[in-house]
Amino acid sequence: MSSNLKILALETSTDACSVAVWADGNVVERFETGNQHSELILPMVQAVLVEAGVALTQLNAIAFGRGPGSFTGLRIGAGVAQGLAFGANLPVVPISSLAALAQGVDAPRVLAAIDARMGQVYFGAHAKNDKGLVELVGVEQVVSPAEIPLPKGRDWVGAGSGWDQYHALLSARLDGRLARWERQASPRARFVAELSSAAYRAGQAVAAEQALPVYLRDEVAVKQAKPLT
Image 1 (cartoon, rainbow, N blue to C red):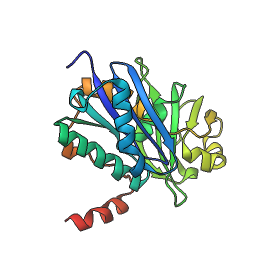
Image 2 (tube, one colour):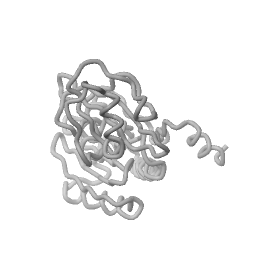
Image 3 (spheres, helix red, strand yellow):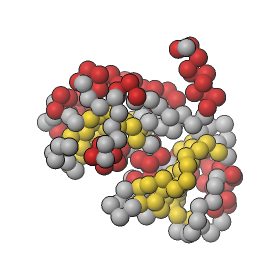
Image 4 (cartoon, rainbow, N blue to C red):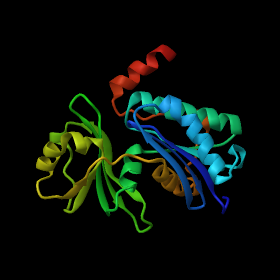
C-alpha cells in the first residue's frame, strides 16, 4: 500500500453534500446543504482536487458514503463514485454514512440516527477504538425512535437528523444512558475519508461495480431494482 495515501471522498446521504480529498492525513473539503447534490457534486470534486493539487489519476481510491440515508442522495453519490472510478481505473471504498456521522462527533460512544421519514430513523451505535476510529456496536437498522435497541452503559452521545427530528422520543427511550445530543450534525466527506483510509489499508477496497448504496429499507431497495431485472 502507498505510504502517501490519496483518497477522494463523497458524502451525499442527507440534505448535506460534501466532497473531500484526503492526502495522507491532510484534508481539503467542500460542504454545502440544501439538497442540490446533482448540481453541486462534480464542481465540488473539481474544486477539492485543484486545491489539493491532486489529479484524479493520482488517487489511490474513491470513497463514498454508502448509506443509509436519502435514496436519491445515495444513488447520486454511488453513481458519481462509480463513474469516476471506472474512468480513472480506481478501486472504491464504501463507508457507512452512520459511521461517518459518528466519527465526526467528539465522544467515545455515539448513537447515530438519520431521519428515515415515515416515523423512523436509520440507527447505529458506535464506539471509538484505540485508534480513534468508530466501530459499529450491534447492527445498523431502520426503526421507530421509540423502539431503538438499548445500548449497554451510559454516557452515550446522540447525533444526526434523527435526533433533530425525534430527540424527545429518543431521549425518553434511552432513559439515563444519554449524556447529551448534538444538534444539526451531518455525515461529512472528511470523516468518510478518515474511515476509508484505514479501510483501504486493511484491504477493504472493492471494484467500481461493487460500489452500491445500502438502503436498509428492503422493500424500497427491491422496488428500485425491479426495472433493472
